[in-house]
Length: 450
Ligand SMILES: *Cc1c(COP(=O)(O)O)cnc(C)c1O
Image 1 (cartoon, rainbow, N blue to C red):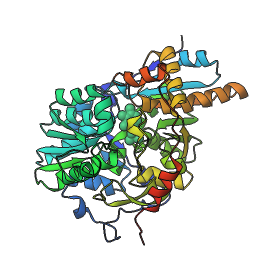
Image 2 (spheres, protein in one colour):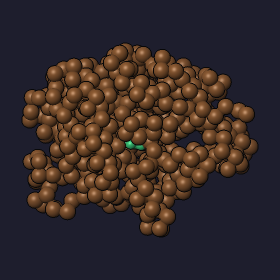
Image 3 (tube, rainbow, N blue to C red):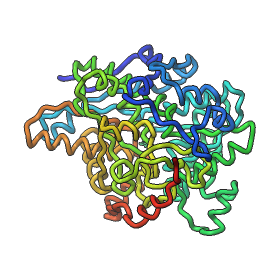
Image 4 (cartoon, rainbow, N blue to C red):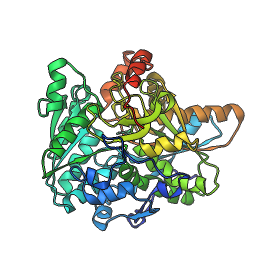
């Protein structure tokens, strides 16, 4: 029988993170302050510890993973690389399909990979509390768990639609000792202003970020933690791709294409960047970010400086954006409803070094159900986007007879998303495409820079 799972030992947990900046053809664009000038590290010290700020601006190729962080990783890492033999058979494709399964983390997704180091560095800096936002609840639950590991209080602003749709993610945050508020909330001036105008506002990630940043900036004992987008977050996630490369060596194989769902870009960067290092050295590997047609940041957005949040508290970052006031439809892949994207992913996409595709909601659930029936694991709705794109490629291979090696990141399991699956089975899900007019209006409001 051919091998199915490729498993590493705890001692194989990487000792360094990989920094893609070292292999990019051009240096990353700097974040800008309110005056339109590049900000220095001191602009970030009210909300981040220095160790993370240093990682944010580092150009070093390899950054050591502190031993206490590697020790915490041992609770669930290394994660398995799995050959999807049953899915291949179900599709009748000559392609080989592999996936890296990040659903083995306690909170059920890759987000724990950055929650642990972020909690660690904040604790080392003497911080007592973290304020953060969460969309679908994956990040909020991850940081609540990591905060508990390192003795930090965690306060989570959870996008209202998810707070209502995903009560069990709330309960997880509380089980790990975190406090959770529906955003927009009455806790902050940002939230109170929004609610005064629109008491039923469903919230957005951009708005929840504003609330958390406002709280962190106003208290010395409190820092802010972001679950995606920033360079240090993508750096932490490279542990996924670094492990995967060792596992492909065990398998005696190497991917032709790597797929990952893309919201803020962290699991895509995490799985793809270590392969980008090979691509930069001349290897032929295609890296594909998969996003929803309802929030098509890379495929329909504009590459421009924009804020990371709705209120404009964050520095401006050069990224693909739909506009920081873009209100995406309430699709069930809450983790993919962000108006912007990682500046590193955006720059590589702009330079034609990585690819992106957008897929509609119904087709993603169809792919997720097919995957679950073949492989057993029920994927998160976000992960279904990568599965869709990977299955589409496997079916193209079936038509052409190509024996490609396809690899996708299964970023999380869907055990807390079964209400979304229920709606899919009941025929109650729609294929929203992005509302063209809203998008134009939102892009017209981009900050003017330079
Ligand atoms: C948050 C999340 C995503 C999207 O976020 P990225 O930063 O783009 O990785 C994808 N999958 C799962 C399971 C998530 O929780």
